[in-house]
Image: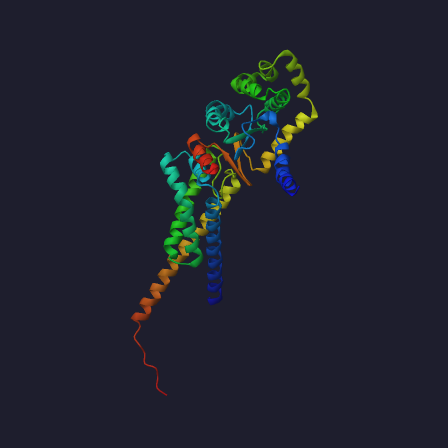
Length: 163
Length: 194
């Protein structure tokens, strides 16, 4: 049982670092270019007024960078993975909607010039699945630790036999 | 002597770069800090809207004042049955100095020739009889057809995946932009010009 748990922990660690790297790359690819290019990608979805487009374009890459740092360092795993799952679910829903309508717009995932396609949908869907797995594992892990702590408190202390 | 040699070294790459641009399909000041390569398809309705709504403002605010150098590039999409033919006529018209006039005629009458396929009939309205003969002959010239192909290859290299797409060039940086509203475009061009 113990080796299987260790392997699972290693898989989770690799997935968390990978997801962090993806968020880091996404943030870097937006921040290296003028913000108007990402604003244009956001605007193409036709969901927000101009002021909100500008706000999202100027803040979202920094939020992605924050998520990347938190995922890589493992700080606040539950909050971080819930936030990354919510963000990826939002991206995925918007991309599916746009693709279904045949709008042929850029996904805006890693800078301009990448149209929404089955490949981008598969990629975003996979990232969402990974993020949900990490969120689930973070909550289950926390509950297990709490249960173990309660059990330890409930058990009567048995005196060590004296030699 | 040393100074003139240094100047020559500095100017040669600029001259080489300028040589790759077809001047008959370019507008504005070649020394402008920003160059826009506009990849468009004469049969694409969004390109027609861009030509009608955005381009005049871009011309007025940036190209005529010399802030932006505009270079037209052909990017006929395979889904449009007459766009490659129209691109060939436009490139041929560029060689008689009538690119802009032919482009205007093609965009203004797009619904008509796109439906009936009589592309040259529309092109001819912007040309004199002598020019019509020249353009008709040039449109079948391998160098003209090759020019259209080269433009498309350049677009593909710049990740152009639809039309109209502007590749905004500032120094060594190239930014492909499509569907940008004019307000954002202005903000982008102003920030790049600084």
